[in-house]
Length: 561
Image (cartoon, rainbow, N blue to C red; front, side):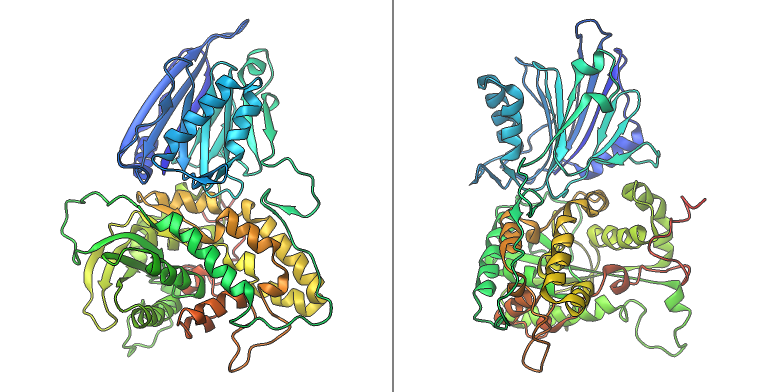
Protein backbone atom coordinates (compact mmCIF):
# COMPACT_ATOMS: atom_id res chain seq x y z
CA UNK A 1 0.00 0.00 0.00
CA UNK A 2 1.12 3.52 -0.67
CA UNK A 3 0.22 7.18 -0.56
CA UNK A 4 -0.11 9.17 -3.78
CA UNK A 5 -0.05 12.88 -4.47
CA UNK A 6 0.25 14.36 -7.95
CA UNK A 7 -0.43 17.74 -9.48
CA UNK A 8 -0.62 18.97 -13.08
CA UNK A 9 -0.30 22.75 -13.37
CA UNK A 10 0.59 25.38 -15.94
CA UNK A 11 3.97 27.06 -15.57
CA UNK A 12 7.29 25.87 -14.24
CA UNK A 13 6.87 26.65 -10.55
CA UNK A 14 7.44 23.63 -8.36
CA UNK A 15 4.28 22.44 -6.62
CA UNK A 16 4.67 22.36 -2.85
CA UNK A 17 3.22 19.60 -0.69
CA UNK A 18 2.53 20.98 2.78
CA UNK A 19 4.25 19.55 5.84
CA UNK A 20 0.90 18.34 7.19
CA UNK A 21 0.04 16.57 3.94
CA UNK A 22 3.53 15.04 3.77
CA UNK A 23 2.99 13.70 7.29
CA UNK A 24 -0.37 12.18 6.31
CA UNK A 25 1.16 10.54 3.24
CA UNK A 26 4.08 9.22 5.31
CA UNK A 27 1.67 7.72 7.84
CA UNK A 28 0.16 5.66 5.00
CA UNK A 29 3.58 4.61 3.68
CA UNK A 30 6.25 4.78 6.39
CA UNK A 31 8.88 2.72 4.52
CA UNK A 32 9.77 5.20 1.75
CA UNK A 33 8.98 8.70 0.51
CA UNK A 34 9.86 9.74 -3.04
CA UNK A 35 9.33 12.85 -5.16
CA UNK A 36 9.71 13.59 -8.84
CA UNK A 37 8.88 16.59 -10.99
CA UNK A 38 8.78 16.96 -14.75
CA UNK A 39 8.03 19.87 -17.07
CA UNK A 40 6.67 19.28 -20.57
CA UNK A 41 6.41 21.77 -23.38
CA UNK A 42 3.53 21.10 -25.75
CA UNK A 43 3.12 22.84 -29.06
CA UNK A 44 1.52 26.27 -28.79
CA UNK A 45 1.21 26.31 -24.98
CA UNK A 46 2.95 27.41 -21.82
CA UNK A 47 5.02 24.77 -20.01
CA UNK A 48 3.10 22.20 -17.97
CA UNK A 49 4.60 20.94 -14.72
CA UNK A 50 3.77 17.54 -13.30
CA UNK A 51 4.76 16.83 -9.69
CA UNK A 52 4.59 13.36 -8.15
CA UNK A 53 4.95 12.22 -4.52
CA UNK A 54 4.67 8.60 -3.38
CA UNK A 55 5.07 6.92 -0.01
CA UNK A 56 5.41 3.15 0.39
CA UNK A 57 4.20 0.53 2.86
CA UNK A 58 6.17 -2.51 1.69
CA UNK A 59 3.95 -5.61 1.68
CA UNK A 60 4.94 -7.31 -1.60
CA UNK A 61 8.27 -8.76 -2.64
CA UNK A 62 11.44 -9.16 -0.60
CA UNK A 63 12.54 -5.52 -0.52
CA UNK A 64 11.22 -1.97 -0.28
CA UNK A 65 10.54 -0.76 -3.83
CA UNK A 66 10.88 3.03 -4.18
CA UNK A 67 8.18 5.08 -5.90
CA UNK A 68 7.27 6.92 -8.07
CA UNK A 69 8.31 4.45 -10.79
CA UNK A 70 10.07 6.19 -13.71
CA UNK A 71 11.26 5.26 -17.17
CA UNK A 72 14.36 7.36 -17.75
CA UNK A 73 14.24 6.74 -21.51
CA UNK A 74 10.59 7.34 -22.36
CA UNK A 75 9.79 9.69 -19.47
CA UNK A 76 6.77 7.78 -18.16
CA UNK A 77 5.88 7.96 -14.45
CA UNK A 78 3.73 5.53 -12.43
CA UNK A 79 2.29 5.90 -8.90
CA UNK A 80 0.69 2.72 -7.55
CA UNK A 81 -1.36 2.22 -4.39
CA UNK A 82 -2.77 -1.26 -4.25
CA UNK A 83 -2.44 -5.00 -4.56
CA UNK A 84 -2.59 -6.68 -7.96
CA UNK A 85 -3.53 -10.19 -6.87
CA UNK A 86 -3.92 -11.40 -10.44
CA UNK A 87 -3.26 -10.00 -13.92
CA UNK A 88 -4.75 -11.68 -17.00
CA UNK A 89 -5.98 -14.38 -14.64
CA UNK A 90 -2.54 -15.30 -13.31
CA UNK A 91 -0.95 -14.60 -9.93
CA UNK A 92 2.06 -12.28 -9.71
CA UNK A 93 5.39 -13.06 -8.07
CA UNK A 94 7.47 -10.22 -6.66
CA UNK A 95 6.55 -6.57 -6.37
CA UNK A 96 3.26 -5.94 -8.15
CA UNK A 97 3.91 -2.22 -8.74
CA UNK A 98 7.12 -2.98 -10.61
CA UNK A 99 5.43 -5.65 -12.70
CA UNK A 100 2.40 -3.50 -13.60
CA UNK A 101 4.67 -0.62 -14.64
CA UNK A 102 6.72 -2.99 -16.82
CA UNK A 103 3.53 -4.25 -18.48
CA UNK A 104 2.30 -0.71 -19.09
CA UNK A 105 5.59 0.30 -20.65
CA UNK A 106 5.79 -2.84 -22.76
CA UNK A 107 2.23 -2.54 -24.02
CA UNK A 108 2.57 1.16 -24.78
CA UNK A 109 5.78 0.68 -26.71
CA UNK A 110 4.69 -2.24 -28.89
CA UNK A 111 0.99 -1.63 -29.64
CA UNK A 112 -0.30 0.40 -32.57
CA UNK A 113 -2.66 2.23 -30.20
CA UNK A 114 -0.91 3.12 -26.97
CA UNK A 115 -4.16 4.18 -25.32
CA UNK A 116 -5.92 0.88 -26.00
CA UNK A 117 -2.81 -1.00 -24.86
CA UNK A 118 -2.64 0.90 -21.55
CA UNK A 119 -6.36 0.40 -20.94
CA UNK A 120 -5.96 -3.31 -21.66
CA UNK A 121 -3.27 -3.72 -18.99
CA UNK A 122 -5.30 -1.84 -16.38
CA UNK A 123 -8.51 -3.74 -17.15
CA UNK A 124 -6.72 -7.05 -16.63
CA UNK A 125 -5.86 -6.30 -12.96
CA UNK A 126 -7.74 -8.06 -10.17
CA UNK A 127 -7.36 -6.53 -6.73
CA UNK A 128 -7.74 -3.27 -4.82
CA UNK A 129 -5.86 -0.29 -6.22
CA UNK A 130 -5.66 3.37 -7.08
CA UNK A 131 -3.12 4.56 -9.62
CA UNK A 132 -1.71 7.34 -11.77
CA UNK A 133 0.23 6.74 -14.99
CA UNK A 134 1.79 9.56 -17.00
CA UNK A 135 2.54 8.49 -20.55
CA UNK A 136 4.85 11.21 -21.78
CA UNK A 137 4.88 9.98 -25.37
CA UNK A 138 1.14 10.62 -25.75
CA UNK A 139 0.96 13.48 -23.21
CA UNK A 140 -1.80 11.69 -21.29
CA UNK A 141 -2.36 11.07 -17.59
CA UNK A 142 -4.32 7.91 -16.71
CA UNK A 143 -5.80 7.62 -13.24
CA UNK A 144 -8.55 5.83 -11.33
CA UNK A 145 -9.65 3.38 -8.67
CA UNK A 146 -10.50 -0.29 -9.01
CA UNK A 147 -14.06 -1.19 -9.95
CA UNK A 148 -15.03 -1.74 -6.30
CA UNK A 149 -13.39 1.47 -5.04
CA UNK A 150 -11.31 -0.27 -2.37
CA UNK A 151 -8.53 2.33 -2.34
CA UNK A 152 -8.80 6.06 -1.85
CA UNK A 153 -8.16 8.63 -4.57
CA UNK A 154 -9.37 12.21 -4.27
CA UNK A 155 -9.28 14.90 -6.94
CA UNK A 156 -9.43 18.66 -7.29
CA UNK A 157 -9.97 20.34 -10.64
CA UNK A 158 -9.42 24.10 -10.58
CA UNK A 159 -6.27 25.64 -12.02
CA UNK A 160 -5.16 22.14 -12.99
CA UNK A 161 -5.59 18.58 -11.76
CA UNK A 162 -4.53 17.41 -8.30
CA UNK A 163 -4.86 13.77 -7.22
CA UNK A 164 -4.22 12.46 -3.71
CA UNK A 165 -4.80 9.40 -1.53
CA UNK A 166 -5.39 11.71 1.42
CA UNK A 167 -5.55 15.49 1.63
CA UNK A 168 -5.29 16.48 5.30
CA UNK A 169 -7.77 19.37 4.98
CA UNK A 170 -11.45 20.05 4.34
CA UNK A 171 -11.24 22.22 1.24
CA UNK A 172 -14.68 22.01 -0.44
CA UNK A 173 -13.14 21.56 -3.90
CA UNK A 174 -12.02 17.98 -3.13
CA UNK A 175 -14.13 15.06 -4.35
CA UNK A 176 -13.75 11.29 -4.63
CA UNK A 177 -12.63 9.89 -7.97
CA UNK A 178 -15.50 7.60 -8.94
CA UNK A 179 -14.77 3.89 -9.19
CA UNK A 180 -16.62 3.61 -12.51
CA UNK A 181 -13.76 3.38 -14.97
CA UNK A 182 -10.34 4.61 -16.07
CA UNK A 183 -9.91 8.36 -16.49
CA UNK A 184 -7.59 9.88 -19.10
CA UNK A 185 -6.47 13.52 -18.89
CA UNK A 186 -5.30 14.70 -22.33
CA UNK A 187 -2.67 17.38 -21.71
CA UNK A 188 -2.64 18.43 -25.38
CA UNK A 189 -6.37 19.14 -25.27
CA UNK A 190 -5.92 21.13 -22.04
CA UNK A 191 -3.00 23.04 -23.53
CA UNK A 192 -5.17 24.04 -26.49
CA UNK A 193 -7.64 25.81 -24.21
CA UNK A 194 -10.17 23.32 -22.90
CA UNK A 195 -10.80 23.22 -19.17
CA UNK A 196 -9.74 20.19 -17.13
CA UNK A 197 -13.19 18.57 -17.15
CA UNK A 198 -13.40 18.93 -20.92
CA UNK A 199 -9.98 17.32 -21.32
CA UNK A 200 -10.78 14.22 -19.25
CA UNK A 201 -12.37 11.12 -20.78
CA UNK A 202 -13.74 8.10 -18.92
CA UNK A 203 -13.39 4.53 -20.19
CA UNK A 204 -15.49 1.80 -18.50
CA UNK A 205 -13.79 -1.15 -16.91
CA UNK A 206 -15.39 -3.73 -19.14
CA UNK A 207 -17.30 -1.89 -21.83
CA UNK A 208 -20.14 -4.43 -21.93
CA UNK A 209 -23.75 -3.27 -22.23
CA UNK A 210 -25.22 -6.53 -20.94
CA UNK A 211 -28.39 -5.75 -19.00
CA UNK A 212 -27.70 -7.42 -15.66
CA UNK A 213 -23.92 -6.86 -15.53
CA UNK A 214 -22.94 -5.51 -12.10
CA UNK A 215 -19.67 -3.79 -11.16
CA UNK A 216 -18.19 -4.86 -14.53
CA UNK A 217 -17.52 -8.19 -12.80
CA UNK A 218 -20.42 -10.57 -13.38
CA UNK A 219 -23.98 -10.92 -14.64
CA UNK A 220 -26.41 -10.92 -11.74
CA UNK A 221 -28.57 -14.03 -11.53
CA UNK A 222 -32.13 -12.71 -11.62
CA UNK A 223 -33.74 -16.14 -11.91
CA UNK A 224 -36.84 -16.89 -9.86
CA UNK A 225 -37.46 -20.36 -8.44
CA UNK A 226 -39.80 -22.73 -10.22
CA UNK A 227 -41.91 -23.64 -7.21
CA UNK A 228 -40.50 -23.70 -3.69
CA UNK A 229 -36.70 -24.17 -3.62
CA UNK A 230 -35.16 -26.71 -1.29
CA UNK A 231 -33.87 -25.24 1.97
CA UNK A 232 -30.19 -24.40 2.29
CA UNK A 233 -28.51 -27.14 4.34
CA UNK A 234 -24.89 -27.92 5.25
CA UNK A 235 -24.64 -30.32 2.28
CA UNK A 236 -25.79 -27.68 -0.25
CA UNK A 237 -23.31 -27.08 -3.06
CA UNK A 238 -23.32 -23.34 -2.37
CA UNK A 239 -21.89 -23.89 1.14
CA UNK A 240 -18.97 -25.90 -0.20
CA UNK A 241 -18.37 -23.43 -3.04
CA UNK A 242 -18.32 -20.50 -0.61
CA UNK A 243 -15.76 -22.28 1.53
CA UNK A 244 -13.47 -22.80 -1.46
CA UNK A 245 -13.95 -19.25 -2.75
CA UNK A 246 -13.15 -17.75 0.66
CA UNK A 247 -10.09 -19.96 1.12
CA UNK A 248 -8.74 -18.92 -2.27
CA UNK A 249 -9.39 -15.26 -1.53
CA UNK A 250 -7.80 -15.43 1.91
CA UNK A 251 -4.74 -17.31 0.64
CA UNK A 252 -3.87 -14.33 -1.55
CA UNK A 253 -4.38 -11.91 1.33
CA UNK A 254 -2.75 -13.62 4.33
CA UNK A 255 0.13 -15.71 3.00
CA UNK A 256 3.68 -14.48 2.33
CA UNK A 257 3.28 -11.17 4.16
CA UNK A 258 6.75 -9.79 4.93
CA UNK A 259 7.73 -9.81 8.58
CA UNK A 260 6.84 -6.44 10.13
CA UNK A 261 9.80 -4.23 11.00
CA UNK A 262 10.84 -4.09 14.66
CA UNK A 263 9.10 -1.18 16.36
CA UNK A 264 11.84 -0.54 18.88
CA UNK A 265 9.51 -1.37 21.79
CA UNK A 266 9.13 -4.61 23.68
CA UNK A 267 5.90 -6.42 22.89
CA UNK A 268 3.94 -7.84 25.77
CA UNK A 269 3.54 -11.10 23.86
CA UNK A 270 6.42 -11.82 21.54
CA UNK A 271 5.09 -14.25 18.93
CA UNK A 272 4.87 -13.29 15.28
CA UNK A 273 1.59 -11.66 14.15
CA UNK A 274 1.42 -10.42 10.59
CA UNK A 275 -2.37 -10.49 10.24
CA UNK A 276 -5.01 -8.88 12.42
CA UNK A 277 -8.80 -8.97 12.12
CA UNK A 278 -11.25 -6.11 12.69
CA UNK A 279 -13.13 -8.21 15.18
CA UNK A 280 -16.61 -7.51 16.49
CA UNK A 281 -17.18 -11.19 17.12
CA UNK A 282 -19.87 -11.23 14.44
CA UNK A 283 -20.37 -13.85 11.77
CA UNK A 284 -18.37 -12.32 8.89
CA UNK A 285 -15.13 -11.44 10.71
CA UNK A 286 -15.08 -14.63 12.79
CA UNK A 287 -15.41 -16.87 9.73
CA UNK A 288 -12.47 -14.98 8.20
CA UNK A 289 -10.39 -15.49 11.34
CA UNK A 290 -11.29 -19.18 11.46
CA UNK A 291 -10.36 -19.82 7.80
CA UNK A 292 -7.19 -17.70 8.07
CA UNK A 293 -6.10 -20.02 10.89
CA UNK A 294 -6.35 -22.97 8.49
CA UNK A 295 -4.02 -21.22 6.04
CA UNK A 296 -1.34 -19.50 8.12
CA UNK A 297 1.81 -21.24 9.31
CA UNK A 298 1.47 -22.59 12.87
CA UNK A 299 4.08 -20.21 14.27
CA UNK A 300 2.12 -17.07 13.34
CA UNK A 301 -0.33 -15.48 15.71
CA UNK A 302 -3.58 -13.76 14.73
CA UNK A 303 -4.62 -10.55 16.48
CA UNK A 304 -8.34 -9.92 17.01
CA UNK A 305 -8.87 -6.16 17.33
CA UNK A 306 -12.03 -5.40 19.31
CA UNK A 307 -12.91 -1.75 19.93
CA UNK A 308 -15.25 -0.28 22.55
CA UNK A 309 -15.93 3.36 23.41
CA UNK A 310 -16.88 5.36 26.46
CA UNK A 311 -20.14 6.92 25.29
CA UNK A 312 -21.05 9.77 27.69
CA UNK A 313 -24.77 9.32 27.03
CA UNK A 314 -24.53 5.65 28.03
CA UNK A 315 -22.32 6.47 31.01
CA UNK A 316 -24.85 9.01 32.27
CA UNK A 317 -27.59 6.39 32.52
CA UNK A 318 -25.58 3.71 34.37
CA UNK A 319 -26.34 2.72 37.92
CA UNK A 320 -23.79 3.94 40.43
CA UNK A 321 -23.28 0.41 41.75
CA UNK A 322 -22.55 -1.08 38.29
CA UNK A 323 -19.63 -3.48 38.53
CA UNK A 324 -18.65 -4.04 34.88
CA UNK A 325 -16.59 -1.39 33.10
CA UNK A 326 -18.38 0.72 30.51
CA UNK A 327 -16.28 -0.94 27.79
CA UNK A 328 -17.24 -4.47 28.80
CA UNK A 329 -20.95 -3.78 28.37
CA UNK A 330 -20.55 -2.65 24.74
CA UNK A 331 -22.38 -5.18 22.54
CA UNK A 332 -19.35 -5.83 20.34
CA UNK A 333 -17.16 -6.48 23.39
CA UNK A 334 -19.64 -9.05 24.72
CA UNK A 335 -19.92 -10.74 21.33
CA UNK A 336 -16.18 -10.46 20.70
CA UNK A 337 -15.24 -12.27 23.90
CA UNK A 338 -17.80 -14.98 23.21
CA UNK A 339 -16.50 -15.58 19.67
CA UNK A 340 -12.87 -15.41 20.85
CA UNK A 341 -13.60 -18.25 23.26
CA UNK A 342 -15.17 -20.27 20.43
CA UNK A 343 -12.13 -19.73 18.18
CA UNK A 344 -9.82 -20.86 20.99
CA UNK A 345 -11.95 -23.97 21.46
CA UNK A 346 -12.09 -24.83 17.74
CA UNK A 347 -8.45 -23.97 16.91
CA UNK A 348 -6.55 -24.54 20.18
CA UNK A 349 -3.13 -24.74 18.50
CA UNK A 350 -3.41 -21.27 16.96
CA UNK A 351 -1.91 -18.41 18.97
CA UNK A 352 -4.89 -16.09 19.14
CA UNK A 353 -4.66 -12.70 20.76
CA UNK A 354 -7.80 -10.79 21.74
CA UNK A 355 -6.90 -7.09 21.83
CA UNK A 356 -9.40 -5.01 23.82
CA UNK A 357 -9.13 -1.47 22.44
CA UNK A 358 -10.77 0.81 25.00
CA UNK A 359 -11.31 4.43 23.96
CA UNK A 360 -12.12 7.05 26.64
CA UNK A 361 -14.33 9.92 25.53
CA UNK A 362 -11.48 12.37 26.14
CA UNK A 363 -9.35 10.46 23.62
CA UNK A 364 -12.17 10.46 21.10
CA UNK A 365 -12.36 14.25 21.39
CA UNK A 366 -8.56 14.62 21.15
CA UNK A 367 -8.50 12.78 17.79
CA UNK A 368 -11.69 14.25 16.34
CA UNK A 369 -10.05 16.85 14.08
CA UNK A 370 -7.72 14.21 12.63
CA UNK A 371 -10.61 11.83 11.94
CA UNK A 372 -12.69 14.60 10.35
CA UNK A 373 -9.89 15.51 7.94
CA UNK A 374 -9.23 11.87 7.03
CA UNK A 375 -12.85 10.98 6.30
CA UNK A 376 -13.47 14.17 4.28
CA UNK A 377 -15.25 14.75 1.88
CA UNK A 378 -17.65 12.52 3.86
CA UNK A 379 -19.29 14.73 6.49
CA UNK A 380 -22.24 13.10 8.25
CA UNK A 381 -22.87 11.82 11.78
CA UNK A 382 -22.88 8.27 10.45
CA UNK A 383 -19.54 8.87 8.72
CA UNK A 384 -17.85 10.03 11.90
CA UNK A 385 -19.32 7.33 14.14
CA UNK A 386 -18.09 4.60 11.77
CA UNK A 387 -14.77 6.37 11.21
CA UNK A 388 -14.04 6.62 14.95
CA UNK A 389 -14.53 2.87 15.33
CA UNK A 390 -12.29 2.00 12.38
CA UNK A 391 -9.65 4.58 13.31
CA UNK A 392 -9.06 3.34 16.84
CA UNK A 393 -9.45 -0.33 15.94
CA UNK A 394 -6.81 0.03 13.22
CA UNK A 395 -4.45 1.73 15.66
CA UNK A 396 -4.41 -1.62 17.45
CA UNK A 397 -3.35 -0.39 20.91
CA UNK A 398 -5.03 -1.95 23.91
CA UNK A 399 -4.90 -4.83 26.36
CA UNK A 400 -4.24 -8.32 25.02
CA UNK A 401 -5.20 -11.79 26.17
CA UNK A 402 -3.88 -15.02 24.69
CA UNK A 403 -6.69 -17.01 26.35
CA UNK A 404 -10.10 -15.93 27.67
CA UNK A 405 -8.85 -16.58 31.22
CA UNK A 406 -5.48 -14.81 30.77
CA UNK A 407 -4.57 -11.65 32.59
CA UNK A 408 -4.74 -8.67 30.17
CA UNK A 409 -1.42 -6.99 29.36
CA UNK A 410 -0.67 -3.74 27.47
CA UNK A 411 -0.12 -4.42 23.78
CA UNK A 412 0.27 -2.81 20.35
CA UNK A 413 -0.20 -5.05 17.33
CA UNK A 414 2.75 -5.28 14.94
CA UNK A 415 0.51 -6.64 12.15
CA UNK A 416 0.36 -4.41 9.09
CA UNK A 417 -2.50 -6.25 7.38
CA UNK A 418 -6.08 -5.87 8.60
CA UNK A 419 -8.88 -8.19 7.50
CA UNK A 420 -12.40 -6.82 7.19
CA UNK A 421 -15.64 -8.74 6.67
CA UNK A 422 -17.22 -5.95 4.66
CA UNK A 423 -19.23 -7.07 1.65
CA UNK A 424 -20.81 -10.22 3.07
CA UNK A 425 -24.12 -8.51 3.88
CA UNK A 426 -24.51 -7.14 0.36
CA UNK A 427 -23.54 -10.39 -1.35
CA UNK A 428 -25.49 -12.85 0.79
CA UNK A 429 -28.55 -10.93 1.98
CA UNK A 430 -27.55 -9.94 5.50
CA UNK A 431 -29.43 -6.67 5.95
CA UNK A 432 -32.90 -6.42 7.48
CA UNK A 433 -34.09 -4.74 4.28
CA UNK A 434 -33.51 -8.01 2.45
CA UNK A 435 -35.93 -9.82 4.75
CA UNK A 436 -38.40 -6.93 4.42
CA UNK A 437 -38.15 -7.10 0.61
CA UNK A 438 -38.90 -10.83 0.66
CA UNK A 439 -41.89 -10.35 2.96
CA UNK A 440 -43.18 -7.57 0.69
CA UNK A 441 -42.73 -9.17 -2.72
CA UNK A 442 -41.19 -12.62 -2.48
CA UNK A 443 -38.18 -13.64 -4.54
CA UNK A 444 -38.68 -10.93 -7.18
CA UNK A 445 -38.40 -8.13 -4.59
CA UNK A 446 -35.47 -9.90 -2.89
CA UNK A 447 -33.57 -10.27 -6.17
CA UNK A 448 -34.14 -6.58 -6.97
CA UNK A 449 -32.88 -5.51 -3.52
CA UNK A 450 -29.82 -7.75 -3.66
CA UNK A 451 -28.91 -6.54 -7.13
CA UNK A 452 -29.28 -2.92 -6.04
CA UNK A 453 -27.03 -3.45 -3.00
CA UNK A 454 -24.30 -5.29 -4.91
CA UNK A 455 -24.37 -2.70 -7.69
CA UNK A 456 -23.74 0.04 -5.13
CA UNK A 457 -20.65 -1.59 -3.61
CA UNK A 458 -18.38 0.55 -5.80
CA UNK A 459 -20.18 3.65 -4.51
CA UNK A 460 -19.82 2.65 -0.86
CA UNK A 461 -17.49 4.29 1.60
CA UNK A 462 -14.42 2.15 0.97
CA UNK A 463 -12.30 5.17 0.02
CA UNK A 464 -13.18 6.78 3.35
CA UNK A 465 -12.39 3.58 5.23
CA UNK A 466 -9.04 3.25 3.43
CA UNK A 467 -8.04 6.79 4.43
CA UNK A 468 -9.05 6.20 8.04
CA UNK A 469 -7.27 2.89 8.60
CA UNK A 470 -4.20 3.48 6.42
CA UNK A 471 -3.31 6.42 8.67
CA UNK A 472 -1.73 3.90 11.04
CA UNK A 473 0.53 2.33 8.41
CA UNK A 474 -1.72 -0.69 7.94
CA UNK A 475 -3.50 -2.04 4.90
CA UNK A 476 -7.09 -3.23 5.12
CA UNK A 477 -7.99 -6.20 2.92
CA UNK A 478 -11.51 -7.35 2.06
CA UNK A 479 -11.64 -11.11 1.34
CA UNK A 480 -15.37 -11.04 0.56
CA UNK A 481 -14.70 -8.46 -2.17
CA UNK A 482 -12.32 -10.60 -4.20
CA UNK A 483 -13.45 -10.26 -7.83
CA UNK A 484 -13.80 -14.02 -8.32
CA UNK A 485 -15.78 -14.46 -5.12
CA UNK A 486 -18.04 -11.53 -6.08
CA UNK A 487 -18.56 -13.00 -9.56
CA UNK A 488 -19.51 -16.37 -8.08
CA UNK A 489 -21.87 -14.73 -5.58
CA UNK A 490 -23.72 -12.56 -8.11
CA UNK A 491 -24.11 -15.53 -10.48
CA UNK A 492 -25.57 -17.72 -7.69
CA UNK A 493 -29.38 -17.61 -7.40
CA UNK A 494 -30.84 -15.78 -4.42
CA UNK A 495 -31.99 -18.99 -2.71
CA UNK A 496 -28.39 -20.26 -2.74
CA UNK A 497 -27.30 -17.34 -0.53
CA UNK A 498 -30.14 -16.50 1.84
CA UNK A 499 -33.20 -18.55 2.67
CA UNK A 500 -36.10 -16.37 3.80
CA UNK A 501 -38.58 -18.98 2.56
CA UNK A 502 -37.48 -21.24 5.43
CA UNK A 503 -37.48 -19.39 8.79
CA UNK A 504 -35.12 -20.02 11.67
CA UNK A 505 -35.85 -23.00 13.93
CA UNK A 506 -34.03 -24.63 16.83
CA UNK A 507 -32.00 -26.67 14.38
CA UNK A 508 -31.88 -24.24 11.45
CA UNK A 509 -29.86 -21.00 11.52
CA UNK A 510 -31.24 -17.58 10.67
CA UNK A 511 -32.21 -17.22 6.98
CA UNK A 512 -30.20 -14.00 6.40
CA UNK A 513 -26.77 -14.95 5.00
CA UNK A 514 -27.68 -18.58 5.65
CA UNK A 515 -24.98 -19.90 3.29
CA UNK A 516 -22.33 -18.18 5.43
CA UNK A 517 -23.98 -19.26 8.69
CA UNK A 518 -23.97 -22.87 7.54
CA UNK A 519 -20.28 -22.54 6.68
CA UNK A 520 -19.62 -21.26 10.22
CA UNK A 521 -21.40 -24.32 11.62
CA UNK A 522 -19.37 -26.60 9.36
CA UNK A 523 -16.23 -24.93 10.72
CA UNK A 524 -17.29 -25.84 14.26
CA UNK A 525 -18.64 -22.46 15.35
CA UNK A 526 -22.26 -23.11 16.27
CA UNK A 527 -22.58 -19.99 18.44
CA UNK A 528 -21.06 -17.66 15.83
CA UNK A 529 -23.45 -19.08 13.21
CA UNK A 530 -26.34 -17.66 15.23
CA UNK A 531 -25.01 -14.16 15.83
CA UNK A 532 -27.31 -11.31 14.78
CA UNK A 533 -26.26 -8.53 12.41
CA UNK A 534 -25.21 -5.32 14.21
CA UNK A 535 -23.83 -2.10 12.71
CA UNK A 536 -20.35 -1.19 13.97
CA UNK A 537 -21.38 2.24 15.29
CA UNK A 538 -23.96 0.62 17.60
CA UNK A 539 -21.84 -2.37 18.57
CA UNK A 540 -18.86 -0.22 19.57
CA UNK A 541 -21.08 2.59 20.98
CA UNK A 542 -19.77 5.42 18.78
CA UNK A 543 -23.25 6.44 17.60
CA UNK A 544 -25.06 9.40 19.21
CA UNK A 545 -22.26 10.25 21.63
CA UNK A 546 -23.52 13.79 22.22
CA UNK A 547 -27.17 13.99 21.23
CA UNK A 548 -29.74 11.25 21.12
CA UNK A 549 -31.70 13.32 18.62
CA UNK A 550 -29.09 13.36 15.86
CA UNK A 551 -29.67 11.37 12.68
CA UNK A 552 -27.03 9.50 10.74
CA UNK A 553 -27.59 11.72 7.71
CA UNK A 554 -27.10 14.97 9.67
CA UNK A 555 -23.95 16.95 8.92
CA UNK A 556 -21.41 16.94 11.75
CA UNK A 557 -20.91 20.16 13.71
CA UNK A 558 -17.87 21.19 11.66
CA UNK A 559 -20.03 21.49 8.53
CA UNK A 560 -23.48 22.31 9.89
CA UNK A 561 -24.57 25.78 8.77
